Amino acid sequence: MKFGLELPTCTAGMAYPVPFASIDDVVRIGLEAEQLGYDEVAGNDHLSTMGYVRGVWPGPPDYFEPLLVLAHLAARTSTVRLLTGILMLPLREPVLLAKQVATLDHLSGGRFTLGVAVGGYREEFDQIFPGRRATRRGELAHEQLAALRALFSERRATYRGTHVRFEDVELFPKPRQGPLPVWSGGNSDGAIRRAAELAQGWLPAHLGAEAVAEGRRRLDHHARAAGRDPADITTAVQLNVCLAPTAGEAHDRFRRSQFPVWHASLRGTMQKGVDLDRYEALNLVGTPDDVCRKVAALEAAGVESLSATMFVGDTVDEMLDQIRTFARTVMPAFR
Image (tube, rainbow, N blue to C red):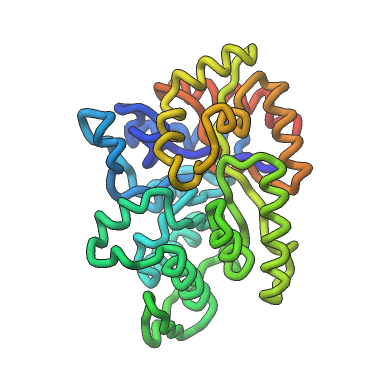
């Protein structure tokens, strides 16, 4: 099992309160993660705030662009992998994104993984592209992934889709890794299909062991239908962590945090049908022994990495305390 954590690049006002982390704090957390033995650090992605964030907080939060943050960390670290967890693919132009990603893979010495998804908030896409309100983001993301694969693998790439089109693009350098790992994020069947047909990994969020195993069975079926070996596709999962000496203390700390508000904002999308009690049970909330049991169940279900893990904290110090406790009490049991 590998372990990664989510840097607070674009989570202030969402999973974390405002104010939360400065850019110096974001970098400091990334550097300490490598020292603590985490396998990966991830950056979340938003270009604009959501309506619920504007309604809850009197001032806007700072959202730091994840590719630039990870490029900076590439120069300050040597072993930890760098992940976008996730980058909202429908908001990005694929040729420019391919150039950025290839450059970052070289800057990091081949330590970059591109995690992408359609995003949990349709309103953000509509804010940025008001003329594309009829666009189905899943269809757009499928074309973008296919386009990226062509740009990364072909000397001169042409793509003619409904949403994505370019002609005779000679994009060099190619990524240092071959292939550069691309993970499809999301819990929907569309996200699973994109992972099976076009990506090297699947990164769902806030799913328990049974749901991950069922999703993996569907992924394997789609991969074989596409002529791919399912063994070539990684299964990761993104969860929240809230540790305490007793289960009651962990429960209270979790309920006082910003995470229940964030969960409520996603009840119409990725948390549809999942009430707060179920949401807490699915995530890594409890004592270290409780959390180890949940991690073991996920590992038995085929999860290879806990990626872009989000640690409860109302301040940077509280978040770092959770990160350090997890590294000391949970990670050694799975090394």
